[in-house]
Image 1 (spheres, rainbow, N blue to C red):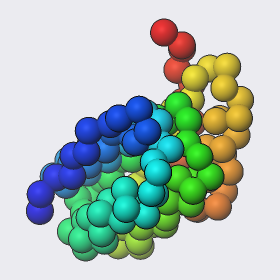
Image 2 (cartoon, rainbow, N blue to C red):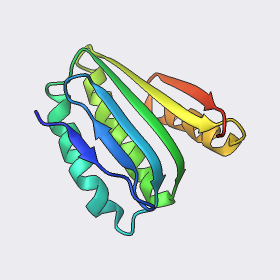
Image 3 (cartoon, rainbow, N blue to C red):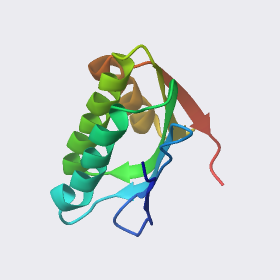
Amino acid sequence: MDNLRIEGTKQTPEIDFDANTGILKLSGRSIPENTFEFFNPVLNWLDEFSAQAPDKVIAKINLEYFNTSSSKYILEILKRLKTVLKDDKDVLVEWYYEEDDEEMMETGEDYEDVSGLPFEIISIEEE
């Protein structure tokens, strides 16, 4: 299976999903004009990935900002990862937030509750 790599822009996040290592990175800003058009190939890739995921999958989510329509797709990504968990594989979500961004920290906690996936909420120092 091919890896999924999408360069980030000012409006779209960088996506670096490695099918072999099981490390899925999502970072940057997510305010695409057409969220369906941007995220649909990502969800399709995850559907294929979930059928042949390695024993351990780590999703590293480090978004500085995302809009409401992106949040629906982030939740959808987490739902796809939950299907991997059902196959007796380990899934961990590493949710990064800048240390003074309490809202992003709480969003990670909310996603943990809603998704039912194990999360590690990680504070990073601002540069």
